[in-house]
Every structure is written in structure tokens, then in C-alpha cells.
Amino acid sequence: MMRSRFQQGLDDLRTRLLRMGGLAEQAVDRACQAYIDRDLTRCHLVLEGETQINLIEREIDELAFDLLAMQQPMAVDLRFILAVTKINSDLERVGDQAVNIAERVMDMVELPKVELPVDIARMAAAASAMVRRALESFIEGKAELAQAVLEMDNVVDRMKDEAFITLVKGMNEHPETTRQALDALLIARNLERVADHATNIAEDVIFWVRGADVRHNIGPEAPVQTAVTDTH
Amino acid sequence: MGVGIKVEHLNAWFGKTQALHDISIDVPANHATAVIGPSGCGKSTFVRCLNRMHETVPDARATGKVRMGELDVYNGTAAVQIRRRIGMVFQKANPFPTMSIYDNVAAGLKLNGFHDRQRLDEIVERSLKLSALWDEVKDTLRKKSGASLSGGQQQRLCIARALAVSPEVLLMDEPCSALDPISTGKIEELIFQLKENFTIVIVTHNMQQASRVAEFTGFFLLGKLIEFDKTEKIFTTPSDKRTEDYITGRFG
Image (cartoon, rainbow over all chains, first blue to last red; front, side, top):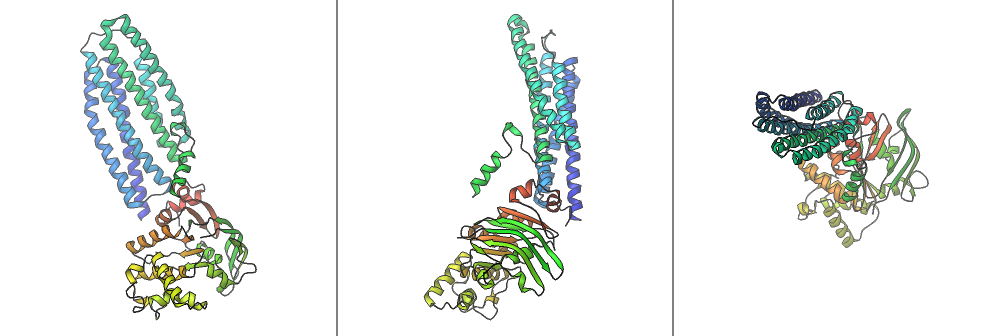
């Protein structure tokens, strides 16, 4: 009886996180589409959607806290709940980045439209795909899918670096486009952060599934051994 | 100081029923090692083999090797001598009901012919201090019987009685299963402190307890040792699916 209630709690946590993931992914897509179409309506939808994301973030944390306190989970269940709380936080930040992008777009729409030497749409597609695949790896519980997300991060980092170089060059050559270029630069930076959050989510999925901490390219045993030594 | 226990190919039977199958394990000195597993998995039989209590059951026998430090438990050593070096605390506190608190603690020493009054006083005080009971009973040592204490106090009295004969190893078979959370907390804190001087093996059904007090944990199932590792490994990322299923409540 207790176990089935616990399992129900885990399922509930999973469902809510997927809902949160869907909203965060939708917010990024909407913000990027708003950039492409200079669409203020979509910008407002992103800003309004943030409230919902924030509410679900709190619900997930509360549910996770209750399960930890009431059920004292172990092993894979403990790793799952810890991973969910961290993914929850990353998804909320993805939502924040979408809001930042929407605000930049709202600023740009006020300015004359100019051609900028940057492919934000391509970068947005890459960052968005990373979030989507990270969530798929969570749904499937497959570490291999998560591993593939980690390998995509370098691509988005390179896009951001290239955007930085070409946009700064463009600002020097056409100072009248500086404000628009600066907005695009900040959007590129926001998308790079979205990709970073997707990477974190993928790392948390690997932690849940394999019990391996792959963050920061540190060997899995190093921090654990230090902790053991300290307690003796 | 505690000593390590090296168990090699230990098998145990009750009549024709084999209760333990080829157990090999190194219990490290001066650490607490928890033994977990579902009812009937052989965990109590395992600890009872360490001090040869198993053989006190009619028709029970064991084969294999158990070494406690330099001592070969099953070869050439008298069972009484083994039990003097390996103290044991049971699930239900079992003080001698007609004896005073003092006599309960001193019983083992007196049985061994130890009658130096002043040394006995010192040892009783030290043992009761080690078991964190001294402050609660020091004024009624000879007036009150062991049975007059609360359940938690009785269990700590039994721990003091076990410690009085200066064992190197302390075996605890579900020592807190009949205690309330406050008494349990005291015993767990005690286990933590006793590790400095003793090697502790604790059988428990309470996995949170194992994770709180023990640095190493062994998981038994159907008389076999499925997994033995550092406790944090067992409870966060066990290697064997059966261990994971048990500790996450998916069976057992």
C-alpha cells in the first residue's frame, strides 16, 4: 500500500516535470519565432507563460520535498527525485531565458529593421533541439540519449562565439545598427544559456539512470572518495 | 581496539536446511558494518556464526573459516574464549531481572572470577559511561534492578554488560527494533562513538538506520551475500539489481 502510494508520487512528479518541460520548450520556441517575425503577440505570450512555469516549479519542489521526507527513498528512487529537482530548476531558468529573449525582441521591434550577420533561427533550432532531446532522454530513461545532448553543446557554443565575432564586426562597420546588433548578441547569449541548461538536464538524467556524476568532466570516483576520507 | 573479521566460504545449516551459502566477507576493524536483507535471508545466522552462537542450536552446524584478528574462531579456540572477545546485543533487551544495575554490568567479569572490588567499580562506571547510561543510573546502581529501567535504558545496560568484558567486536542483532525513536537515537549515537574502540556488526531491518550508523553494508538474500560495499554506494548506486529492488521496496 505504502509502496504504491510512493510509486504514484513518483509518477506524479514525472508528469509534472514533463508538463514543465513542455512549457519551457514552448516558451523558447515562441520567443525565437517572435524574433524571426518581429511578433509582439508572441512576446507577450512568453511573458504571461512565465507565471505558469514558476507555479509548476514550486509544485514540483513541494512534491519532491514531501516524497523525500515521507518516504525516505533509496537508490534509483532517490537519484530520480534529486534529478527531478535539479531538472526543475534548469527548466525554470530556460523559461527565464525565453523571457529575456522576448524582452530583447520587444526592444528590437521599436527600432528600424536591419539585416544582421547572424543566423539566430539556426541557433534557436539547435538550442531548442537540445532541450527537446534532453527531455526525451528523461522520458525514455536512456543515458545514451542524454550523452548525445552533451555532445551538441559545443556546436551551440561555437555558434555563439561566431555570432559574437560577426556582430561586433558589424557594429564597427555599421554603427547605426549597434542597438539591434547588441540585442541579437544578447539573444545569442540567451540561447547559449538555454543549451547549457539542456546540458545540465542531460547530466542529471545520466546521474539518475547510471548513478554517475558526469559534471565538469571530473572522474566519477574522485569526489566520493574525498567525502569518505573526510568522514573517517 | 577493534579487530577485523575475515570470513571465508562460510556455510551454515539448521539440520538439513542450508541457511548460509559460501559467504566470504572482510569486516573492517573499528567501523560499523550493517547486515540487511528480508526476513529469513540468513543475516542473524551470519552474525551468530561469528561468535559461534549458531552451534548452540540443536542440529545446527557451520563450515568455513572465520578469523578475528589473529584468532581462528572455528579452529582450536574454545567457544567461551571467542564470546569473551565478541560481545553481543540482542533484539530484546535481556538484563538479569533479579540483579541490580551494578551486578548486571559486572556479571560477566564475576563469572570469569574477577572479584577486585575497586577495579570492578571502575569497569562498571566506564562501561556505563561508554553506553551513555551512567548519568541516568549512577545514583541507583545498587538499589534498582536492571528490569526496572525503561526499554531503551535496558538495551544500553545490555550494551554496558557486553562492553564490561572488553570485547574487540560488538555484534548487534536488531538492537533498536523494540525501541522508540529517542532511545533509538541514543543507541545510534552510541554506535557511532563505540566505533573508535570496537568493531561493530549490526543486523537491522531499518535501512535508514543502516545508512545512518554503518560505513559498510552487506545485503543478504536467501542465505547468500548479494553485495557488500560502502554504505553510501549500497544506498545510492547499488551494483546488483536485487539490492536495488530490495532497498527501494520493490520486493521483500
